[in-house]
Length: 247
Image (cartoon, rainbow, N blue to C red):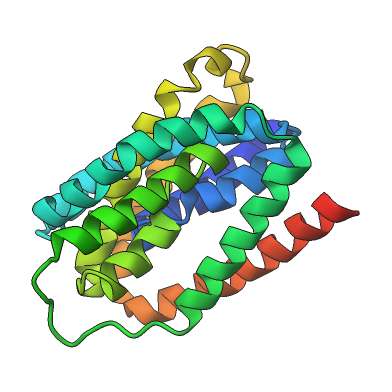
């Protein structure tokens, strides 16, 4: 299979995850870029942030139009992560590739396990600023260090910590992903020039199209079911990446 076809297929899957779940794009994009498209862990993290930033902003428009974005909670959550995301991006440049891969796999596995036992509240609760700031700062640090947008952790946090309903958490998660990714990219700007744009550009285009399909899918399939499917895929990816980092 040609590199272009692989990029298009991987981009479509990443877009479906972002559009349908409000996150998970980068946690799939990073291993796809490393194992299917030959990127180094550092280059894959930078490329994934670019792909996820553009795609999440595109998908956010549709969710906002449908009234599924909680702007106050999302901006508070995202703003708390800007500083940690930038510091994490600086720290990542000093960590060996195997360490980043192993850390990525552990975080992905923990997120998958959390998503397999979701307990969304029946009604939305008032947002507690202290909780939003604490959770947002933690996600920002992970975004900068591991090159993930944070949506695969943001959505469970928005439902479990802040009490948002699933559809609102999906839309709001896209806002968090976009802000965190942009912040992390500011510390990686110097590495973007060395990326293979013949791969990154079609990957991003396919992801954008996939995100619109993901939004439509989210309107038809119950959120918990989408979460379970994604969590199972995420566990498999995490296991493969962890084995690769230690073998």
